[in-house]
Length: 129
Image (cartoon, rainbow, N blue to C red):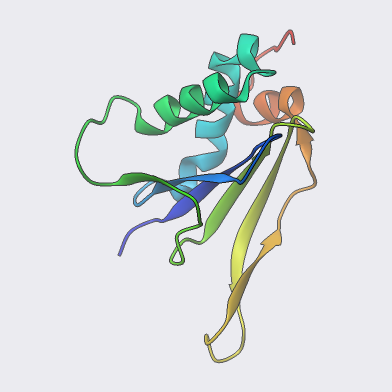
């Protein structure tokens, strides 16, 4: 089975990057918030911030399974958390299927959060950006 999800990182300069998790989609909002909180001094440096968010996703796991980095979303994921570097916003999406499960697409399940508001909402910490 699994609990598959993606973090979509929208670059200010090029194509998006996707981080994939096979087992922790249910925790993606908390993971992204932790990465943003850990990287607060790098919010305007997307290369560093992307790495910091990926470290939060791994949480010390050094196995050869469970996580990936790509240029497209994993088709079997149900949750997508989108980090837009230029706007400094995070939006959450969930996959919905048509009646016969033949087609699917993501729909937003949150309005865009500022980085600060997202960290406050999903980590319950004070943020001084």
